[in-house]
Structure formats: structure tokens, C-alpha cells
Image (cartoon, rainbow, N blue to C red):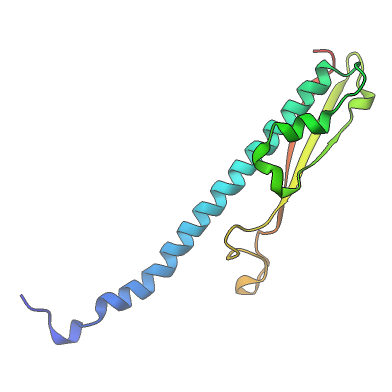
Length: 135
């Protein structure tokens, strides 16, 4: 069966309509996966720093930030910052470690300013770990 002359080019038009939507779904999935991975890494690093501080809070040379940074090697290039209250750690107190990073868009497509409205990027992600001092 031969295609009719009036249907010629219909596939190109359909592709032009569907392709932007498919690309948006693909880029959104990649961005979400990256944000999810960074958030999990931040939380793990904060927990590891809090664990280290809770166990060794009364030892000299406490390096909570170094321990937290070492627990998240995938975040090396993102400028992760670590804050803690290990200096006030004592019996029956909690130590709290917070890690944070400002994440930019992987593709640049979802940055602020697209479509006339602010986008989700850049976004600041935080991870928090809290543990009882002395275990």
C-alpha cells in the first residue's frame, strides 16, 4: 500500500512535536538522579562525621571536617562545607554535623531564567548527622 500524497511529512511533524518532550523527560531524569545522589552522599558524610566526633570527642586533634570530606569523595569538586558542634560535646549531649553544597545544573537547561520564571538551580543541599557523644 503506497502512502497518500497528503500524508507526506507527517512523521517529521510528529517528531518535531514529541522530541522536545522526550528530551525534557530525559534531562529531568538525569538532573533528578544527580541531585538524589549528591543528597545521599551529603547525608552519609554528615553521619560519618558525627559518628567520628561522637566516638573521639575527648581526644586531641579532632578532625570532623576531614572525616566528613573523606566520606564523600564524589563531592570533591563541588566545594562541600562542613560545620559541627563537636567542641561542646560531652556526656549525655549530642554532636551535630551539617554538610552542605551548592549544586548547579548538569545540563544548564533547568537554570534560573528559562521560560521567564526562576528555575530550581542553583540549589543548596544539606545533609545532617546527629549522634550521642560517647556512644
